[in-house]
Image 1 (cartoon, helix red, strand yellow):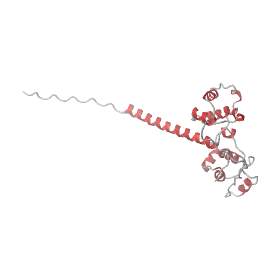
Image 2 (image 1 turned 135 degrees about the vertical axis):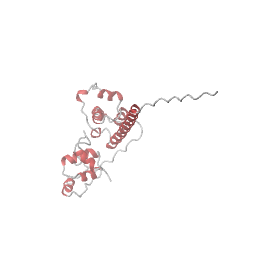
Image 3 (image 1 turned 60 degrees about the horizontal axis):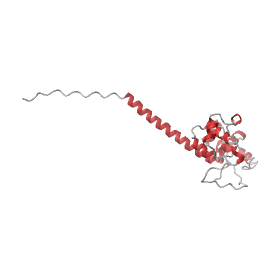
Image 4 (image 1 turned 180 degrees about the horizontal axis):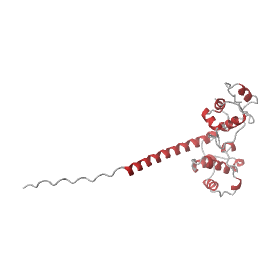
Length: 210
């Protein structure tokens, strides 16, 4: 089933601007209904700006109204009028010149909302450098006063799929580290609380032979 571009941003907009059910939004955006509920509660997709699917030609103007009247109906995605660009699989990520000025905002967004993402991952995802990331992180960037955390998908610097892949890897790495640290902590705790071994008792001296 074809999905809208930037599914989470689209879900944010639909939640804020329509009376569609969570199930309808989840089916249209290819998300789990619990994830849609999390977006509505402000626990998921934090910082993502809503994307209007009608304004960008992904939904017909009467489609939302039709589905609002019938909770069992599914939204129908309009066929794209412009062919999607084939994604590059090799080589360094290229960021259009017009988008490069937005990269500090995207870096700030990742640092603020997803600190578990490693610097190397941010470099690859946004096509930036470690020095730029460090300057944004340390508030020494030349344009620091104008930097505002903004979703890199909304800015058009990366796709939602690319971002989700990075966040999933970072979450797994964080979870594995927490489990490893917990195992090590339990091992140290057991070692500290284990009773010391009692010294071996001396054997009684036997009768010497004549």
